[in-house]
Amino acid sequence: MSTTTYKLVMPEHLNHFGFLFGGNLLRWVDETAWIAATREFPDCAFVTVALDHVVFKKRSGNGDILRFECVQKTKGNTSVQYDVTVFRRAPGRAADEPMFSTTVTLVRVDAEGNKIPLP
Image (tube, rainbow, N blue to C red; front, side, top):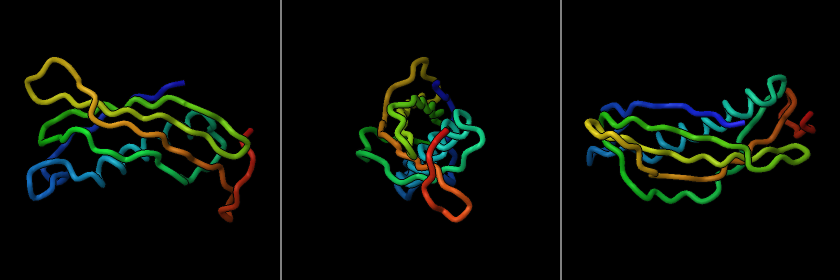
């Protein structure tokens, strides 16, 4: 199963140089993986335990549309990993270009925050 989400980069997402704050991008990547896990395992609660490599390869600016592609990589006993790739499309451009990718690991937890097996 794959999940696609979109975000519009707005002025409140920018740093003092006029580019997207990396923390905002990471928040959206984490959210995208959580949505994918929750849709795939609807009766489960998840927490993020890891993001693999975090290397910002390209910057993004005001008005860019970001596309987040999320695909399950592996499923373990209590955890699931998703590859998340982010593409940007600048205003007036016809094509998306890749700008960031990472692997997100989420773990299923119970109400007390203890790891429990996936169904």
